[in-house]
Image (cartoon, rainbow, N blue to C red; front, side):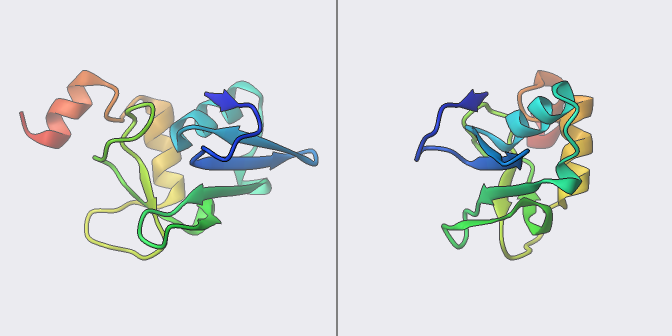
Length: 112
C-alpha cells in the first residue's frame, strides 16, 4: 500500500523525482508493476532489520518468513544470513504470489 509522506514506512521508491512511501516492500513491488516502473532503474530503499537503517533495496538480503505489515513475509537485512534471497528473487516471488500472504505458500514455508 502506498502511504502518504510518513515516518512509518519500510520501503521507498524515488520515481520521476518524487518519493513514494510503502508500508511493505511487497507493496512497492506490486505498485511498480501496476505503474510500469522499473525498480532496477529507480532509487529504492528498505528498512534493514539488522542495522535498523534505510539501505539500498537492490543490495539487501530478504528473509521470506517474517511478520511484515501486509503479511508478505519479506524482511530486509543489510548483512547476509542463512535462508535469505536477493532483491530480484524477492520481486519474482512477490509477483508470482509466492509469499506468506498466500495460505498455500505460508503452509509450505512454515511446514504446517
